[in-house]
Image (spheres, rainbow, N blue to C red):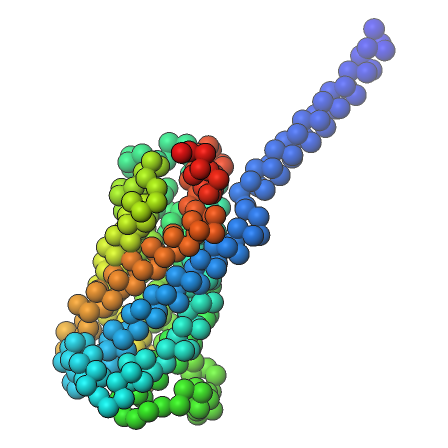
Length: 348
């Protein structure tokens, strides 16, 4: 009897120790399950870089016209007029595609960070925060999905802005200078840094973050919900890709209209056509061009942003599928599953 009593505390202690080990192993495995292998994140980043470079090249002429219109609305009454004047100029191709090289090269790392950080954050947050029944349309499920996609979009912008902002400043400076003469890109970039310093490459950084973070949150939230409405787990191939392009177009054009005033401020600060500071620039635009000046190029910006988002999101999804890292879908609480080429073949 005494022997049994003396051994009971030791047995209970051993049982508690075993329970703690099992609990620790469960937490460790759950934490590990929230992440994918490094190769997954690298392929997602590559898909993002390809998507960004593709969108930048295809839509660069319209982007050049938009920059001229926003930088000098008195000289160019519309983006179409700016585009037509560039097309009729002597060196039309050099004017239209002035700054394309730094824009395309900058779009690759910027978009790789942008899409890569978003997709990686989204996958991890889905596994940690979403539940089995969060595929429905009830209020709580919608709120959790919006939270996941909003936080993931913000993280993508915070990382990508470190590359995006100087790339945009250089691109817009070259676009603006191209209206007077043919510009040597390398010497112009060096002259910008030499004359104004490296900090000048981050002109309008505050306005960019103020615009890009809420704009990206709105764009990605709309995109994910629209893509969810337009497609289901049975859609594949061309039908799913078309849904991604359409969802991207609607989400991009909507978000761009809401954020147009801050885009105007960012462009003016980047080319130096208004006083330094977001507030000072807004006051300057209203005094010189009225409140409508804050929406200069809004229509074409919606068109451009809708097309850019359609190309960007659509290309991103297509390249992801080609690289075998198609969108992940939550399957059980705390876990998710990545759809790959082998999965699609098995489904067939």
